[in-house]
Each structure stands twice: as structure tokens, then as C-alpha cells.
Length: 114
Length: 293
Image (tube, rainbow over the protein chains, first blue to last red):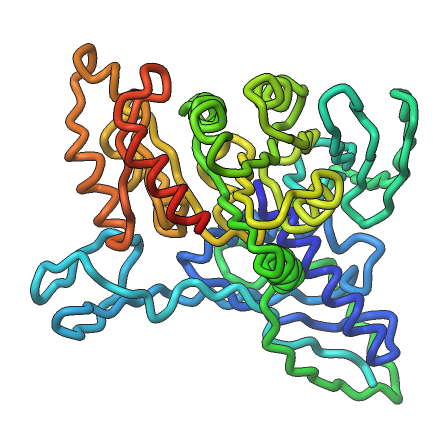
């Protein structure tokens, strides 16, 4: 359940950014979470419920965009969607692949009233 | 609430040397309190008023999560979007880089040992310290939820050690290492081994500033462990397969463990050993010696 520490990081960053922008509330926060980021989106949503209390995010709409993981074969360069790290290349059956997408764990943007 | 894992109410991290327990009492939000005695009664006022009435709070079928959003339309407010593109783990990553810079400047090789509980991390360290302390300056940071037991074992084996007790926390983070290193004061030109909390999931996301991450699997854990818990095997550089002395009693194929691990991470380098008998550990010792040059 490391999602709570992730949620608290999000709140901390939002607090800092709100302070920089001189606002006390954030209207909306957009997050990007890859399917292989190590964060379970449902668990993160649950953790955010607690973490946002008494913070600039307390009334904010929290948008989480899920980024599907994609890998590239290091032998034949085929790009293909993956749900794990051990799916071989569908073209040449090679296990040596690199991830192109799926590790994202980002705050994309905040919407504030100003 | 515990920010490390969320499973407890208290958020206290303790960093202590054997014999000087609870010297440093560290809270996650960067308030440090130093205590001379053993008593530390902190009333944490992180009370979260949780009225259990979220009947329709969770709209998890859509990826958008509605948060009691009150639509007050103020007359003179304009919506402004601030583009951030910030890594959520940036704080930890930055602090990990700071730790790394400190280690590099002092020519300290930091190794982060991760595994399930009971894979033999501490036992590997004990034997390594006894065997190598003449040749290499080794120091250890121990991570466990509770007790000084591992630090005491390491001290008996003969290496300087600091114990981090994470309380209810499930992993070490760069901030804890930053503070523990200040207590430990590892020597220049040495190897620092960090034994993470026994947990094959959470520590994978938290860099500590290590130059190599070492995942340990004991052969009693099953051949398919690397694909059941892939994040840790993916993020490691080295894989130690421990308890090989038990192979005659188990229906397990070590080559199969390696094959699964390589499917998850084809860069992994393996060491097979029994920390109990010492079998297969010479190659590991040689590798450590080369790191220390």
C-alpha cells in the first residue's frame, strides 16, 4: 500500500504549486499513471480520498489518465502493447524488449481560479 | 496517518545504533526530535476525521474520480491551467540523487538489497562481513518495521550499522537513508549495504541513491516468483539465488528461476549461493572486491 505515500507526494506538490500561484484551492488536478508504474489506480484513488483532506486539493476534481504500456522489441523493433514485463515480441518471440510507455507517474497540470 | 504505507496511525521512523536505541526519532514530514532517553511519547495530531459515509464516492469504473466537488461559480474567477509535467516521485528521486552524489564524492559504493522477508538477506550480510572485513570497509543500514535484532546481528558480525525502524512503513526511502547515513558516517572508499524492509513490492519504486540494486530470492520461494513480483526483478541489477543447500530437498529447478527472471529483466546478473554453508559465495566476494577498487 505505497499508494498512500504517492498520494501524499501529490498533495505536497499541489500545495507547493498553489502557494507559488498564490491560491488556497485547486480546482482540478490531472494525473498520468502508466499501467506498469507500480501504482494501482483504484488504490491511488482510495488513498487520495484521505490525503486531500485539509489540503489545497480538498475540493479538487482529480482526473487520472491511464497510460497503457507499450514495449519495443530490441531485435526486430516491433512495437506492441504489453500488460507485464515478460511478454515476448509477437513477431519474433524475443524476450529482450524495452518499455516505451507504461512507467508514467506524473502530475500533468493543475487548474486554479485566477 | 502513516505516509509510508498508510497502514498505521502513527508516522514515526526510528533511526538507531545498537546500544543507543531511539536516539533519533524521525517523522516523515521532516521534523526531527532528538531524544537522549528511551521515552518518546509523541501525540500525533494527524487526526483524520473520517465519517464513514462515502456511499457513492468511488466512481472507479471511470478513471475520473469525483471528489465532493462543490461547483461554486464565483463571478470574477477565471480558470487558469498550470502545466506541470512533474514526476510524482521527484522529491524522493532528487533526494536519492543527493545521496548518490555524497556516495560518489566519498567513493562509497551503495548497494540496496531487496527481497521478501526471510530470503536470507541478513545471513548473507553476516557471512560477507566475517569473510571480507579484512579486505573491504563495509558498513550496513538495516531496515525493518520493528526491532534492533538485525542491527545487533550485524554488529556482532563486526560491521558498523544503523537500524531504521519504519514503524508501520513498508519500504525505505531516500530521506531515511539521508538521515541514517549522517548517523552511520560511512568511511571513504567503502561499501555501504542497505538492507531494505522485507517486501517484494513497495521498495521497488523508491530509489535510495544506490549504485546497484540486488534482489534476493531463496529457492524455497518458487520458480515463478520473478514473474509474480516482476517490478522488483525489473528494477534490479543483480539477482542472488540463496539457500541452494536446500536444493536436494525441494522440487525446484534453479535454471527455471533464472529463465523467468531473465524474461522480466534480461540485464540481470546472477549469483547462486548458500549463505548458511558458504557454498558459491566466493564469486560474490570477488564481485564486491572489484566494486571496491
